[in-house]
Length: 236
Image (cartoon, rainbow, N blue to C red; front, side, top):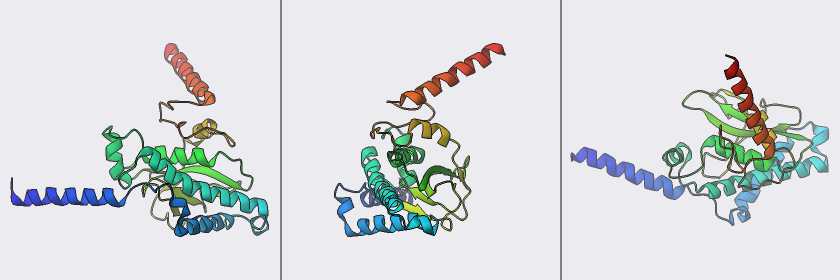
């Protein structure tokens, strides 16, 4: 084997091992770290800054903001542990697409985090789904939080996929250069995980085949679509 080719293979292996060792899901005691506590507090304040001033000072709004922030950070870590994430972003996708991991693609992590943020009804905020550069090799799926009644514009995007469960937040300015839009799948996912649901982490969607343990409502929607497609096919 040529020397240069051997060197390249060794270098690639070293980089892969380095990436793997420095990107692991946060440990169980992660939330007790001072910097994580600061991240949660800062994120809660950032959520409150999305609201009109007269709402931002309300104790109920503060409680919602803190719950959303704490849940986003805690569940991002839990999702990564549950998926046994071992590599940054798209590198981990190689393991999923090679059937070495069951889950961990960005849209799966997106829907998992959305599920967890929908367990509590919120009055002052909206939790939505967004997709970047849809239909391209850079396509990426995330969750966003904005004031109630508002959409993606001006929101804070939450990315639990990129850094192995260490939550990444993106402001409007951070998202410049990418074509971010509302995720067309949200109406289906929101019906699967209505506000106030109590589904555990084992309830997740597998697009387009849905879930191993499906909420009954989504199962009925899927079956209805199949019947409509069958009728349309029969009439052709």
